[in-house]
Amino acid sequence: LKAKRQTKENETLEIKSFFLGPQAENAPWVNDLVKSIMRHWFDRRRSLFGEDPITISKGDQRRTQFRQKIALIRASVEELTARFEKEVPAFSPRYIGHMSSEISIPALLGHIVTLLHNPNNISEEVSRVGLQIEREAISALMEMVGFDARFGKGHFTSGGTVANIEGLVRARYRLARWLALGAAEHASGIAKPKLFETAHRGWESYEKQLPKLPAELLEEKNFLYENPYAISREYEKLFGVDYNGPVVLVTDSKHYSWPKAVLLLGLGKEAFWSVELDKFGKLSVADLKRKVEKARQEHRPIAAVVTVAGTTELGDFDPIDEVHEYIAELRHREGIHLWHHVDAAYGGFFCSLPRGEQSPVSENVQRAIHSIREANSLTIDPHKLGYVPYSCGAFLVGHGKEYYVAPFDAPYIRFDQQSQSGPQTLDGSRSAGGACATWLTAKSIGFGPEGYGVILKRSIAARKRLEGLLAKAHPWIRIAPHSETDIVCFSLAAEGELLSRANERADTIYERFSPAQSKDFFVSKTALKWPAYSEYLDGFLASWKGVRNTDVVTLVRMCLMNPFFDLPSEKPSYAERFVEILVQEIDALTHERDVK
Ligand SMILES: Cc1ncc(COP(=O)(O)O)c(C=O)c1O
Image (cartoon, rainbow, N blue to C red; front, side, top):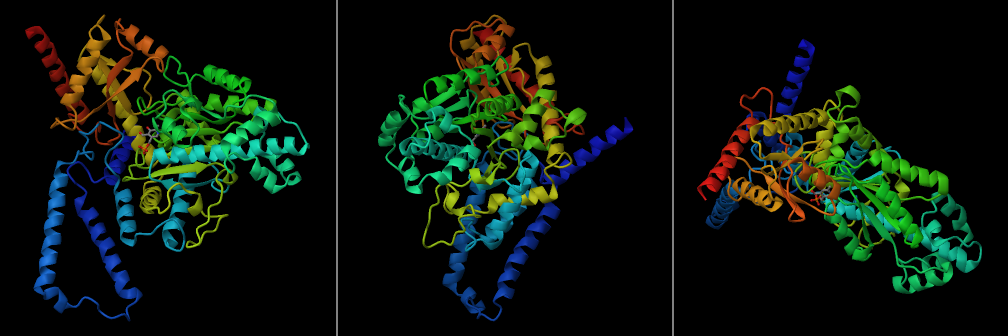
């Protein structure tokens, strides 16, 4: 017991050393480090080309015009810092709204260092160090999620949305090549594959046939190179079926970046096929199987299957392991290779949690986390649970050959098409800031159970504690069930009440704690809808005998990312203080109703 307590105390101490602290408690040593970073930056200039002349003399600096300009800069800086005093205090344990929280000290310092040198990770011509650090940071992320860094490939993006689009771009590119090969086989008469089969034929079969076909023919039959509408008509003739283009199968708890990606890539809104959720709000594997069969019957190639690790609403995990098992079975049994992208924008960092008895999540979630490594591609956002400043997402693929898309050349930039991401990224110019912030956190905090695992274990413990406190605090509080990580959502309903009435109340409580109005705690809100969450919501509503008169459940939503929200050493903790105020607000609502 003593040893357990000691471990807990050590973990709390570590967390306290990773962040500045709600009252800037770590300011003295952080200040020293910031000063040393600035000193280093000044010294580099002085030492690198020391023989160069002094351009800005002391005399220049004493001139009135010069001093006036400096005064203006100073005043503007003061204005900006003053204006930011009104910014949403996302650093505070009182902020439990969106997936935005305190940033870690190493991430902040990594960002500052990089900002000063301002590398552009588009090419080694403008980023000698930044690009190297990016590769190392990508390797660290790969190691955390279980990809083999020797074979994988990836790059940093501005966030999860772009990383998701990067995933679909690769999946579509692979599909276009495999389809083109089948069409070329038909056209040249060397084989007569079926459309669905060739679209998912696998690399082995692709590479076996590739040398037998002229490159021009393959390009001619590729819908990314040629007119896609004309190619569709040609596919119909060659394969002898109606062809209506590819589809994307996405779990219905998806982030809105997925319909956006499908639309942006010109696949058509109709190509977005939602996979139903089960009673736990997770992707239904049975429905996934139905949708795959439907696609096969309709000769619609599947560009990608998308699952979520850490859903936007509930922070929950799809059964990624079961999806993987099904995909593996299709591959072994029928030679059908599906592209599986895991959107782990939020949940990717849970890969740092310990496994087995030490794990704070169920075996199901542990299995889901562990099988992320089987995905073709992955989105993971250091600017969410990596505690890295915005904007910082990352896109990873397990096998380098699935990373490269049609090579673009820019005569004014030196690219190594085979080894660099420069020409392959959706962004052109790219900051190295996020990569270096991630690198520094990987180095100093670590992405394993003793590093980030400690922080995330704490946030999950906070979720469990808050759920317990809320459940006892007021009979109207109805916690959205099956949350396993660090997001808590609740509705406010009396037994047997109309859903619309409960929704109004959740809206009122949200307004009270919204960053626009609140002065103490800050939450967010969300909505779960029928039919996407049908089974889940039916169960939720039944638990308080609610009467459904609308298709939406409004929920107060809290992301408990802040590591100080419920520290065992704090009495009362922020969690306890929040619940106390919340209950007062709910009581005030009851009172208002009585008065009315
Ligand atoms: C599951 C998931 N995917 C993708 C995104 C998009 O990330 P970003 O806002 O960084 O573009 C989010 C954002 O919350 C998310 O929750």
